[in-house]
Image 1: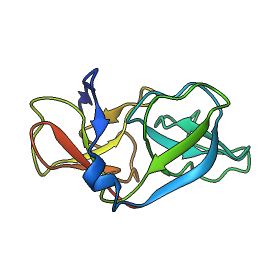
Image 2 (image 1 turned 90 degrees about the horizontal axis):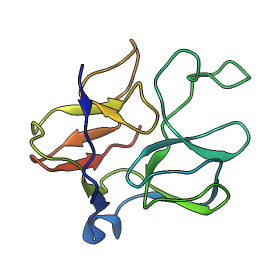
Image 3 (image 1 turned 60 degrees about the vertical axis):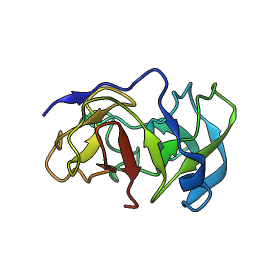
Image 4 (image 1 turned 90 degrees about the vertical axis):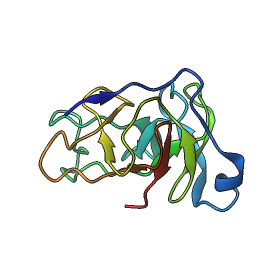
Length: 136
């Protein structure tokens, strides 16, 4: 398993987002970086995903689910839009097309392999630089 370094200019392709699924009307529960995998917590706010046992479950005991990727960077309390399936983003360099990406063990990052058993892929690498968000 390897961490996938996000480029400082990571951003979504506007043509793909025009036809992609999205969730809007949400509120950031903390500062969120751009093109970051996120979840909606049981307080109704958006937080960046992290795959660790300590932060993976809600107070109710259910597993944290991936909801989408941030459209841009947000401050805590800002209104948030998350992009879902088929949105394409420039994310990194020198990635291997055809591999899946998973929520990483560091908040808001991606990994090229599952961190924990049962982790679901959140994106597909479609070129050396681009990912496509998956619907889960």
